[in-house]
Image (tube, rainbow, N blue to C red; front, side):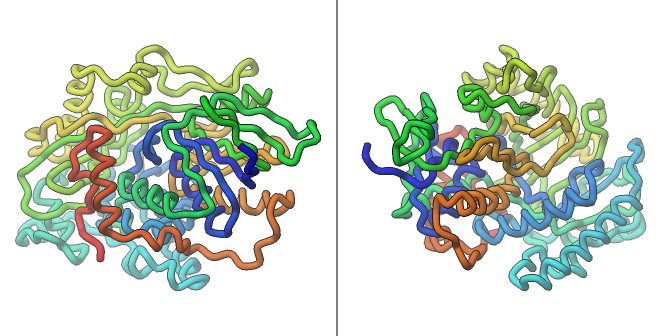
Length: 477
């Protein structure tokens, strides 16, 4: 192949596709490689993390950055955002203090105001004054008496629907309702794939495994890298390693050894049908890794719910957190986890872990004991740069000239990474300087809701999940 691409991106996860779309937006010739037959197959995400409200132990700085990044990504992919709030609570058995939660939320309100001052289009989480609302025990008792609303439109209505099912005697008060929205992975993947297929500046190569990367920077040719697939060789000037938890595979081939953690996690799909109105996402905080780790219930369309339980018999796994060492940049999981990652789950394991997840929710939502297995788990492994397992904001590193390694931990960081790579390729004069940078991407905006509806449903079914999980619980125009 004689064509020389400005950039080659290996890995079509959320970071890879957003990087490719940003480069294509500015007319930069890019080729993107994804070994599966569709993009954004990686670890599941189900909410924006617009403020770090699910992580009591992370720093305020990480919370602010997550809010900024989440707002930017929501502006790019509005048809993937479910505008429903999140119920945040702390069980009486837990060490966390409700005052700490409220102080952090007050900090985030002030930061949200500064983001809106910078750009009024950043006001996607409602007004700052309505970013969160707290409820005392007396408030909960009164709201529980109100009638259910099919599609709530106020914080009180959301709480009314939820509190009828929650054993709030087990919770510290006040509890909080936050404008922390849902984020649909199938819809983001569909919009990204449709946009890439429409682009004249990005060649999307699905069902394509990269076999070899060859460094030719010192071979007196007009390009820096050769990317070898089974049948073709692609010439590129700049290489982006966006392989998620497998970035170390290509680092090793290039004799780069950087410290990283890799963690395997899973969430579980359930079906629960006793309610007539929508409820918010429910968070019951708890110390990660203990028998009472955080419980999270995420609503989907048609009575499907996704469950995280941050214990080793639900979302976390024995030997599920591994780290690189001096001899290997790409650590390897044990046989049990590799079986789940690459060859599929045993039916007994799906049943046992989903039922464990249902039981964890039932501690706080007693009627949830009637929920059933609703589909296969959502699962994957994520890379965490360095050695801090609590890190939730990863970005990008540049270990070589003309080489970038994406190191995102949460999907919300993808646009930040894309812009850092764009800065670097201009600095290295791979492309001319771009004088005006904007968040909007015309490639994504050209994709219609109907197209997203259709392809996201196909992706959910193709991956073995209920079609309903590709829909928003509250339809957007």
